[in-house]
Amino acid sequence: MNQAMRKLSGLLVLPVLLAALLMLPVSAKAEGYECFAELPVHVDLNGENDEQFHVTIQCAPDADPSQPMPDEAKDGLWIAGDGDDAFHNFHFTEPGDYKYIVTQECGDTAYMTYDDVVYTVIIQVTNLETESGTTLQYQVYANTDDDPDTKVSELSFLNTYAPPAPATPKPDDHPEIEQAIKDGTWGSTPTPKPANGLVPQTSDTLPLTALVVVLIVAAVAIVALVVLRKRNAKQNEQK
Picture 1 (cartoon, rainbow, N blue to C red):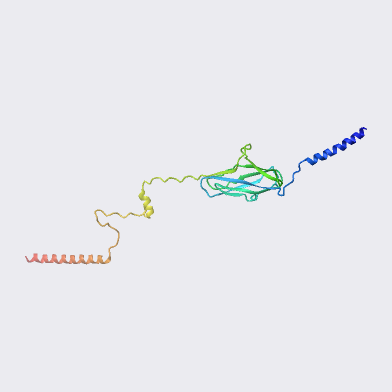
Picture 2: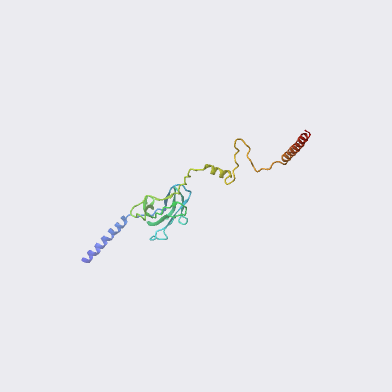
């Protein structure tokens, strides 16, 4: 009798279990069971400079090295000051938390201070139920290494370019010296200015013709003077 009751109970339980299994919801994957993510990056610049800043991404040390990477993983992003760009085409095909490190490389531009903040980024991929089936969606979470407990709303780097201000020239106590240097006369012997309208004496040579005329006039004057003296002498003797 007991054995018959046990067999009957077993036969009744089996249909109940089958009905319960048939009532469980079944999730079917949509044809595009995947998602593509992107990670925006912004660079701020205090000051004026045309440098392109290099932002890189890599797997976090404790992440799977084979996890999906963006198209720009090899070369990174080159972003001008006050510019925007993004890491594109993270291709995810499975739910999970994917962890990355984003940093900016320090360049060698003089008077430039580079932001050395380090971002830890988690791209969380989860299932999304749609009318055509289950697909994937993603959400980005990020924090800095300096404050790991605070989530940030964007990945942003702030650089500062601050060259020294040009020196203010002092007033020139001798402006004539500066002018002489510009004219090319600084260091040469100045020509004396004539006083009272007189012609200044110079070391210039007189023309040859003028010198001959002066000598002739002097000779005639000497001869006339000699003749005049002899004539005066004869007149005195006759008296």
